[in-house]
Length: 424
Ligand code: AMP
Image (cartoon, rainbow, N blue to C red; front, side, top):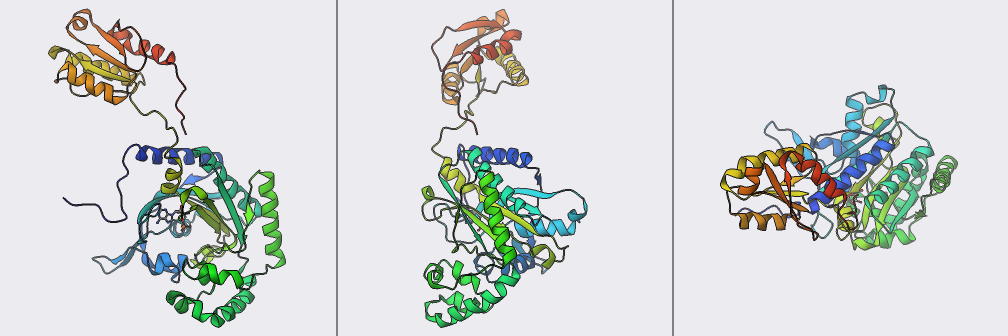
């Protein structure tokens, strides 16, 4: 028996169905906001992540699934989606299409983190990137879209936390201040931070080990007038779109490329891994990767964590509506044709094995959760009909000519009582 790798898991029904519904809801929201899908590769040159995400970040320094392939190329499984989107944007000259640079992606990311509840080594992200728009309207739109998406999938009780990391100019002076503070507090730094503060002092404030204690007394970043104006305007616009949020000047976000607005969505219901989504502006990244000067903003939602928040909610009914049974040996072909006709009429239908006993097929039919069993036995075969047996509600069994079965079932389904299932 060969087991799956630690931190890698099988998504089984009904959780797999929950993932699909979250992704489908996300696609609808993206369409509403003018986003188009980018399907980017899972594997990229390792260098892409080193240069964009940053070699002082945990996900690149410690957690990347990187290897040398047979041709001696340094390759990495993507730990996040933004670098691939930016590479695709530049490589395919997407900035020259004249269209809004609004893209989304859905797919697996890989990080060799210590697995725990809500933290896996392969996990699914839904991400959005808006490239080529520097205005605070883009910030407000992208955060509003994120909140609406979470609402649409049924996530409740989340909070939006916002901060501004300023532009390169704001950070130039701050870098020196912070570096001095960190040097003075060198003994409070963890080993990895000691090695990286000279290259990226801001990283220490985001470090899971020493960050919280350091951040408390660290000097605060003061924004230049333009960055202050941008941040204030973003918050005013979020008020207009009805998005509640809190400013937290301690929110740093661990990746190298962030500038200006950064944000996270958190849920208290998740325990220690409480981040549902993280994002922010990356105004300098496209240019620094060899592309045009294209300011941008984006975010990524963790689907595994959203699914955790939704797993106890009533789900859409995925059971088949009908279950077809051949109660006589010769009835198999007619039953198979009936199944075909039902599906052609849009009625989800299933069967087990027409060659097994009636009892066995009835048992499978009960387990399937179907609303009706459609049975063809000897009598029905002679009459060119099928018997319809309600499985969920009391009701008479009735015999209907085979050609009328699909329309009759549609009528019966309309009349079923009970609350309609909640669908995302
Ligand atoms: P990040 O790219 O680190 O900002 O992550 C964005 C979102 O992806 C987080 O808010 C989480 O919801 C999700 N996420 C990140 N790492 C993991 C992981 N190892 N397992 C599951 N979800 C994750």
